[in-house]
Length: 374
Image (cartoon, rainbow, N blue to C red):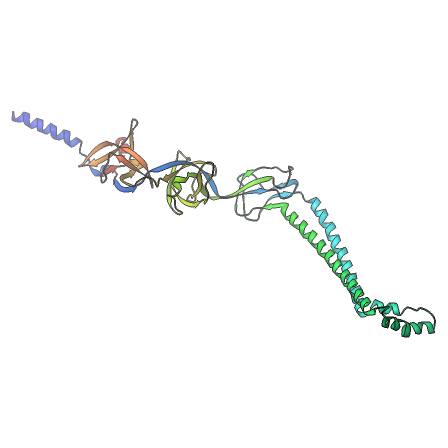
């Protein structure tokens, strides 16, 4: 009897000790209790940090393209050039007009100076009207007498002659300025014939090829700065009040099976879309994030209408799936046990909230699955 009791006790001890494990066999973390609020998941799009559309400013034929989609350029590099032979011919004609106007102005200045130094009225009085005595009588008696009797006004005539030559100078100067303005206008169009990179970036979309005829306003290409990326989302109006510039928001990018990352609120547009009742919001992504513009992404927007609740938060790597039910292994009194849980929304930094199944403070095993496979 004694031997039988001893064997039963030994078997019970061995069975119970088989379930006792050491904490060093697993990597554990404490289930934190944090104030969380419900969030709304919105679909969004990855966009460049900044983007411009380069359009044709003049009509003509494309004679140069700097590169293809993905080619990088520095600020000021030539991207597109449109044929400008017609403008060059018009400029040469305008330069000839400048030379002609300059010659007319020089002649007008000479005539004005001549009128000031040697008035034309005096030159007309010096013209001979007869021989000998008749000419003398004209100079000393006839013309002075006509002025005295009011039949002639030499002062008025001199004023009119001066104004006439001065007006000729002003007309010549105006013609010169008009010719110079025509050259400047053509120079502006010549500059518009060449489109340069407004900043460091890459071509993300090309709309034309060399040889295409374009008209003013026609899109040539799209150019963007992609060293930094953003997420652009259309956020319902009721959720916008919960967003502040500089806030960090959980996001997910569909690259490599899904990349969870924190995005910063960078811009909240001041006006809502009247048809969809949404507000455009942009979120900055960290530098070096894989992927590119146009990719699908998701953003977790906090719902300001919900009340905050204190919920346990655990690493997402600790969650194991048992069929369709999520669970987590905890380590208590040296024993590993499985708890079925109900998951909430992401809490950022690779963590997720737990709605039920945990109270907080438990030692959660985050390498339970890998340990089982050893």
